[in-house]
Each structure stands twice: as C-alpha cells, then as structure tokens.
Image (cartoon, one colour):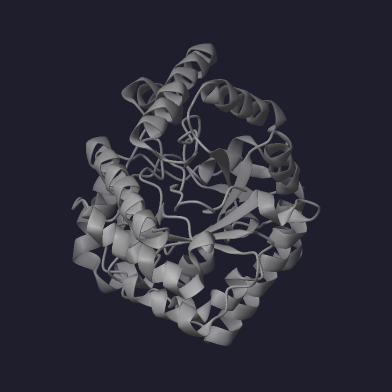
Length: 396
C-alpha cells in the first residue's frame, strides 16, 4: 500500500454518483423489467473509464471504480452469494406513508424515531427502497466470480495510462450482509462466519488482481442505533468483537498492507445524536487485520474525535485515513480547513501515517446520492489542494 512518504496522499471511500445511462437501466431492473445486460456492461465500462479519468484529473492519488456496476455498496451481494432469497414484501419506492412501509422504516432506528417528522420526509426522498430485502434460507457460498472478474477487468482497463498512485476496490464486511435476516443457521455466530467464509473468495480475488481491498463496515458503529431498546454497551461490544473475528477469518492469508478498513456511522444526512463515540469501538477497529483505517472525522458529530489519538496509540506500521471532507453537507470545505485537519492528525501520529480522505461515499446506491456530482468534485478539489498545503508545511 502506498503511504505518505513524500507528501500527503489523497483518497476517498469509493462509491460515486452513477450517470443516468446506468441509473435508467438499473431502475428498470429493480422494477422487474428485462434489460440488455450487454448494454449495461458497456455503459458501466464507459462510466468507469470516465470516473477514473476525472479522479486522476482532479488530483486524487488512490482511486476507485466508483462502484459503477453495483446497485449499492451493500445490496450487490444479492447477486454474489447463494442462500439468500428475496422477500415478497412491498418495497415500491413510490409507496406512501399511508401504505405503512415508510412508517415501519422510521421505527427501525432510535435516531429516526427521535426525529420522526424529519425522517418521515427525508427517507422517501433521499433513501428510497431500491429492492425487497433478502433473507437467508439456505447454505451460503460465493457465486459471483464472473461478476467480480468483469468488474476487476473493467477497472484495470480504465486505469491504463491514468496518472494515479494506486487503486482500491471496496467490498462489504461480513456482518453487514443480511443483518437480522437469518432463517437457516442455528446461531448468529455460525451465520456471520458462513458469510465471512464466502466473502473471503471476493477479498482474495481483489488482492490477487493487484488492487487494495477496502472493507466497508459502517455496521460496527451504526448497528447500535438499530437495537431497540439500546443494549448494555458491553453486550454490543461482544457482538461486534465476534463480527471482527469473522472479518479477520475472511482476511486470513491476505497481507495487511493490501487492506484498508472503512468505518462510519451511516451516511444519511441527519442529527446522528444516537451515534456511539469512536472511543466506544476504537480498540475493535484496531483489531482488524488491515494496514489503514478510514474513519469518518469531518462531520460535526465526530469532528472532535481527533483527540482520541492523543491517548490511543496507533500501532506501528498502521495508517489513518481521516475524513477531512464531509459527504453530509453541500458546503465545500476551504482548503485551509482541510490542511488544518490533516496537520492535526499528522502531529498526533506522524505525517507518513496519514492519508487524507472523505467521511463516506457520495452515492451509497446507484439510484440515490448524497451530494450533486458538481459539489462532490469541488470537495475533491478542496481535498487535493488542502493536502498540498499541508504537505508544504510538513515537508518544508
């Protein structure tokens, strides 16, 4: 993994807004209409080539394929794992609250219950249900080899001639898949380890193809909000320690310097007053067998948590990728603000062990995004410029 040996490198979290050429086809597929898969593959190849070009042009160092082929950073596993079946529950994105669907969804988190009026408006508009939930009703195994191979080949082709330092591919953490949807395995431990065993195929293939593997695991933090009533913190930590054990099982045999781990508290735009603190899970994060840790840090709810690294020692050889731009606001950070955030982390853990990143992805699903693409690219420009300013001060 490239690190900031001569200057502060820049990256982001992975998922980027899809063009309409992809959205229209995926929208049709989600609604049950047949689509031309060859046309979709061609549109994805065009979009990946373009988004790699744009990332290189704006000056990002470590880039992704934007997850252009994926319905979402999470739901893509529906096409890659056996054992899951789609429920028949109504999930039409146009459904109204009178149907009860959105009312039940608001009730699914303590945060959303506490701000019911806000989320009643926000969720249907900004977080539409793209498909029916899947449940596990049989043995889990990996079946997505062809889809994965196509994604990796498309990305590799797009990178030819691109002036970037490195490339990463996101993949979901085992415990994020099918949360609360186990109808087959005798225990939750057996369930999450079965998912981990299947996903190790994907993890290994990404690394073997020469890419950095990014593990997406917002569930470490934001699952807390889904438990009603809130459990004792120690019970929650035991559950998450088991999940980290499952993740490490899936990562077994993969060199740590080929892995980075992403933690956030859910990407939706809201108060987030029910978020756990980073201090509640930092030791669990550091147990993950990865070299770098990408952690949400620019959002107003978590921007104070840089102080944790005054007391928590980052293990030798590890790297922090703090979010220094936020996906939760359309306000574009000033490059000096970005530089100050970078300098703060560099003073705490050393300049060589900091890479400048974003809080979260700018499009968690193909059919919805957190910010307009023009805002996102402006933020990436500020990220690159802020890293340049910080580098001038750190290496002068």
